[in-house]
Amino acid sequence: MRVAIVASIEPDVKPLGVRGAIDTILESIHDLGYDGVELHIRDPDKIDVRRVKEIVDVFGLVVPAIGTGFTYTVYGLSFSSNDSKVRSEAVRRVEEYLKVGSELEADVIIGLVQGVADNRAAGIKNLKDSLERCIKPAEDLGVNILLEPLNRYETNLINTVKDAVTLRNEIGSDKLWVMADTFHMNIEEKSIYKSIVEADGFLKHIHFADSNRLAPGQGHINFREVLKALKEINYNSFITAEILPLPGEWDAAKMAIQYLKGEMTGFP
Ligand code: LER
Ligand code: MN
Image (cartoon, rainbow, N blue to C red; front, side):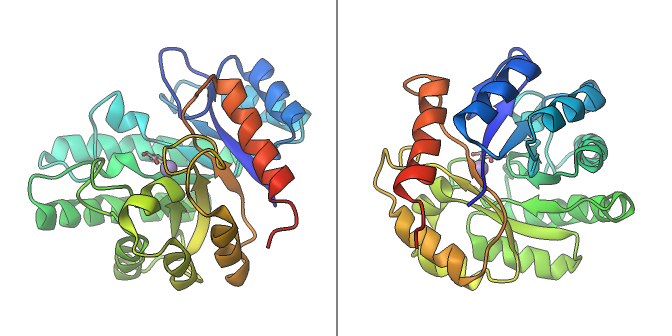
């Protein structure tokens, strides 16, 4: 099992993971036993990607994906906005993330940037249009886009894995994939196990957090069943801890890796 954790290197942001200067956090992430880091980036056009890549390589880490959610939470930009200028700016920023993804060999997540729409049908139409505009750049750069279903309190657009697979199939690009997040699934899916198995062939990445968004093992999600479902679909990508920094960010990071590489070793 390859495990990553969410991290941010920019000041003034609060990731669901760890934050700090690139060299110190990557060293700590490596020392804890993680194989990868999922960088959540606020400003894709401002970060020094070359330096990030250098340090990632020094510690032998992989960047399986990059997070784009700050585009919505910090800048209020979304793929489903009624305002075409807002949508275009969100797409432009995602194009910048795709360039970063190409340098770091990382997929790009579309989660919170899907936004919240006044009218769901219009929102889905705008989301689809914005995603379609990202396909050509994604193809040109050879970067995958990961569509992430979120719970109803964060979006009214893509809530279930099935919603994501449906939109993915409507768009029909092999650069567009679906990812999952156990925290959101615990709220939205009838069965976490079944929805993973039914996403066979489409699922490329997964976030692990427990029912209360603490480190896996600190709530009541049955991770043995989640891992069994992943094994059934021959999932061989990363499991990324995307967790509240509680009781402290590094305590949480330690608990997640100890649970996944300790208690869950060899499971299923
Ligand atoms: C937000 O709740 C989340 O799960 C992030 O991965 C979205 O970008
Ligand atoms: Mn997530």
